[in-house]
Image (tube, rainbow, N blue to C red; front, top):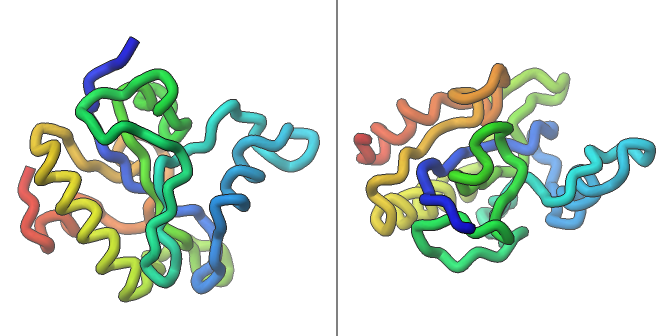
Length: 154
């Protein structure tokens, strides 16, 4: 049974600045058994990834409506998955693996376009950072400040 979409949660891959992350990398990290270095999840954590060049890659299909159907659920934030869509950008850490907003100009542009389009279609859905619902640095920037800077006040 579908749940009403309540959140768009922004994430980072928590990888070093400048290192590309592919959809296959995400699938391997999230779906491989723990014994093989993965998380052993049944589904990846994100619907979409924004690559270094600004390309948006769909990782999990969804029907782009205001509901989260069971087959659309991703494992982005424990306790929020059935009511959220999760997107990520490649990066989020400096070379010593400390949290850092590493979005390239192309990622900034792509994320802004993605979020503005999402907000236009689902204005009642709250846009948040993973760090607003979990004790994490992810996505390594203040989402609420960034939203205001691009003209989204929620």
